[in-house]
Length: 259
Image (cartoon, rainbow, N blue to C red; front, top):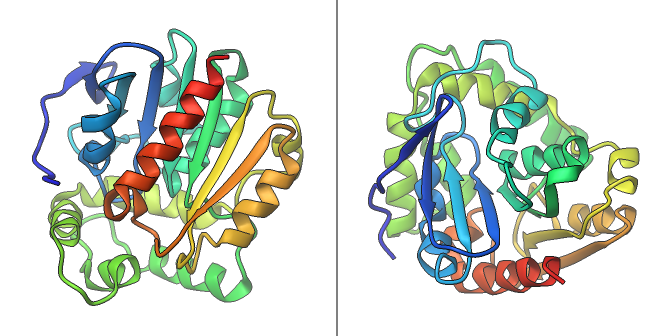
């Protein structure tokens, strides 16, 4: 799989990759990355679906949000892309944005897939993410080494190299703003999950230490139409490292949301 840059269109301050025709699937990446993190999904799933993959505000070629920002600011910036019924899928911070979209813009969301979403962090995890957020100055690029080790371990790979390049080229202010939002969040409110009126897939990796399988199961139990899937041998960057399994899960989910 290659992670080369794709052509974008501009939509109200957002840079957007669009491909394919059919039922619409909106793909939302995580902190520090860009829309190409979904390249494996864009390449395969665009055969059957219309794929819309934006750069988050302050990432890639998208404009910055005003700082400080809240999760709803990211959700509202992407809501303009929901001009027809859409299945929304997000990864990491993108999963929290996707769930917020499904909750606050429910009339336009057919289904929501939350990949590697956090839910009720442990005190240790909470402290660690807050310390990382406090260490960002919004001016210089943060050393990505520790992040890459959390995501990929110590083994080299094309996916790791791609993420390193994106983390080294991201707008420092955009990264700081997004990471602070991520650090402040503890997952969707229980009541928001109980009130979801669309199918909801909670998908994570067996080896994910922060967005754990137990978190996904807990969210799925609260959502009326919740379902959970844990991918064997996968960790945080499973859309890149376990693309086949993720693509199969997303394909089945989007098709199920059309019935």
